[in-house]
Image: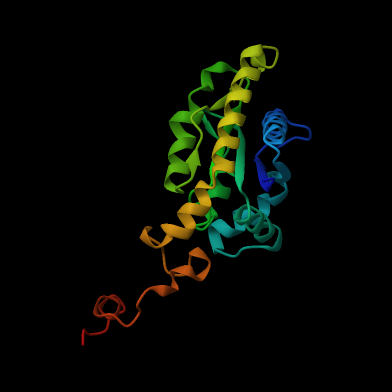
Length: 222
């Protein structure tokens, strides 16, 4: 049975065009092609973080979510799969990239399949994806595909990059079409630790009248 999936590309590239966005677009194109071979359709949305920079900074210091940032969050909420791509600066993922994911609700991306990608001017930064980015997305409880993507300047003409893109795209399609996220959210959501005020209200099944919650609020047990 044919299904329509929503793929979201998050790019932290600062120029237009950027190699960071180019890498993400190549992955998205392969995902669409591979899904089509399975009689599935994929719609792609793009979140350009450079357009949200001021609202991301404001959210970090004030917890206020601006309208553009809120639209990006809503887009991610409805994503069936994500491609997250960042440039590397000073041996680390872009501050804009990490700041965006740090302001997201901890429950927003649970069980969503993700491809991680990074670009840099030198291959010396090749371990940034696995050494730094995977930890952030593990904390957000996403499902990161096994194949990481990194492209230095010299990689763009290397057929090895195309092979890695194909592999990562296939892994993402396999996870996306398996229904893994839906199964987790339908059958296991309550077993995750949620913060009060998160999870789109689904955490409100917490018994606020229990002795533990009364004590936590400074009251007394019954």
